[in-house]
Length: 189
Ligand code: NI
Image (cartoon, rainbow, N blue to C red):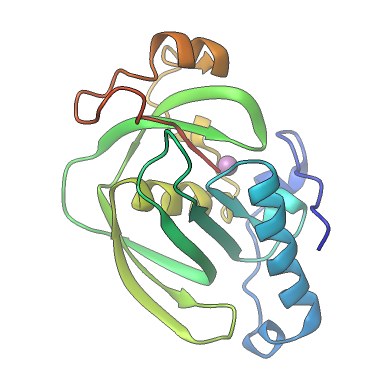
């Protein structure tokens, strides 16, 4: 499966609402190939998530995965989410670092709901209904936003935390008091 080219900010597809995938299309080769390509592309780019508009496909589909490499949070198994609906779980917004494969080299602090209920379909067209918290909930909200033409910069409360990756690593990567030093990576998807 070839990795696809990741669209970058400025490509109109990143600012366009994605269309739902017809359920009858999900099992067909074009969608299955797209899913496989997106997983490959996400892994090649060392991201934790990828939405279809990031490979220039304006459909409601995203994938995410945390592979548990050194310096990353606990592993999260690969998920493929199609035609999702999100409902926030109650709780105060949580600020943490994000980056985006479509906005290379930058990081910023983004408020997100602490948990979300996800409803949608998996790559086999089977119903999904689950609740995710913390880092996983952050990834899901980031990728869901991509399906609505929204990027994390739009969610930032201000631009003062915007930082380049190298400066993030130098000045902020160990800043999270809740986690041991070196285990506070940005959610990049
Ligand atoms: Ni992104």
